[in-house]
Image 1: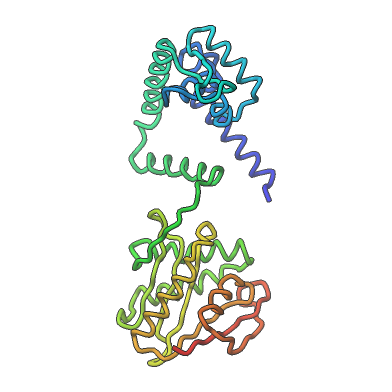
Image 2: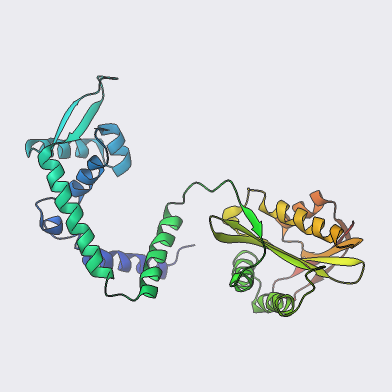
Length: 305
């Protein structure tokens, strides 16, 4: 739930950025165009012709307001309109030569303004800035989720991501405290500092270059393997990432000569439990505990390989 502090922070940032970008000045970037007029010019410049209905949807403007805006800009010689050849009920808009020159001025000044803003920054700060802007857009206007992912061995930084992801996700979703993150950190540290690559492995699921899931196959005894730390980022759920990670873990365990695989899960992890059930794991025993704060039921599952 958004708190008053969240709301105040977003409003404060909006005021800061509109001031930095000069969006409240009478003419945008020293031209005679308002912010809305400049955006309309920019969109029209991206193609030879644009239907008014498409422009209204893109800019999310009221139909009456957009109609008045188009009329004013037509009177100033910046655009012209005509009936669509495919449907006479539709209007097609085109920038005039004067309108395209106005766009070129806006485009050049806008690029110069941004360049002047970020040029003094250190390279690391520029990357932070661009990454933060991408994160804002991703959160507020999520793109269509990718349909593909890859599994790969862990790379530098992945172990830290696994610990951080578990700590943050389990605290947010289940209320687990820092003791759970500490447990994950110990498991990952033990694996990273020394494991037998012939009989132990980790896989990271990646979407568009970013980690979205992980799983470990670890040695419990000569004949028994243990599945540990299955996780899937909620943004990647529904893609089959969790199922694929478990399948790969089981294949590795069989190739490595294990005869049985065990795992310890919690009753609140219902999505993971469905994956384990489909893979053939059976409940061995369960025990209530509060090791990580909230009361849960720890469940030991097993599968003969």
